[in-house]
Amino acid sequence: MTANHKLVAALVGLALVPLRSWTAQIDVPGRIAAARNELMISSREDSERQRTPGYLTGRIGQLRGLIREEILRQLNSGQWKDSTFFQNLSPALSEEWNRPLNLIHKQLNGADVVIIGYSIRHGPSAIPDSTVVIEGFRRAANGYELVDQTGEGLANSVPRLETLPGPATNEIWFLAHGQQTGVMQYHERSRIYGFDGHRFKELWGHEPLRQATFEIANTEVRVTFEEEESGRQMVLTLALLPQGPTQISLLMKQ
Image (cartoon, rainbow, N blue to C red):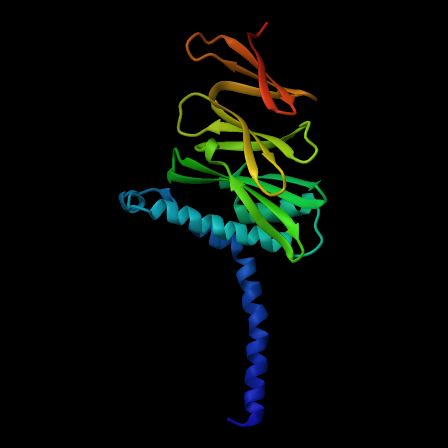
C-alpha cells in the first residue's frame, strides 16, 4: 500500500468514528427497549431463564447502567432546560414502561444537582413487578456524575417524586409515593427522602396504605387512607420539622 493509500484509509477510519458514535446514540431507545423485553415473562422459557440464579439481578443492573449512560450523555451534552431534558429523555426510557418519569433539578450548596426517578418493570407481562430507581447526579469540574442512588424501600411500586418545603436549607426533601404492583386493591407505598447533593437519606416511610391520597402544605404532609379492616377513612399528619418528618396525629376523617 502506498503512502497516499494509507493516508486515505486513515482518514476514512477517522470519519467512521463519529458516524458509529452517532448511530449508537440514535439507537439508544431501541437498545433499552430490547434490554427491557428480556425482563418480561411471556413464555415458559422466559420464566425458566429468569429463575436462573443471578439472571434477573444482572439484567436489571445492565439496564440501569444503559439508562444511566444515556442520562449522563444528555446531562453533559451542553445547555439544556428541564422541559427539553425531560422531553428528550422520555423516548429513551420508554413512556409505556417507565411512567411516571421524575425530574428534580435544583441549586444546592452552590452546586447543580439533578434527581431522576423511574421504574423498571419485570416478570409476568400481565402483572409485572417493579424495581424503583432514584439516582442523584451532581455537576463537577468535568461534568455531571452519579453520586448516589436509592429506591429499595419503594420496591414493587410505581412512584412519583414531589419536592417538599423542608426546613433544611442544605438538603432537598421529597416525597416518593405510588401504586403498588401485583395487588388487587389500590395501595400506595410512600417514603420521604433527603438529598444533600452527595447522599440520599430516608427520613420517613410507611407500609402500603389503601386508597391513599397525599396533600402537601407549607409545614406538613397529610395522608388520607382507608383502614384495612374497618374501611374507615383516616388522616395521618406529618409535621416537616428540622429534626425530620414527625407524625403529629392520626385521626378519623371528619
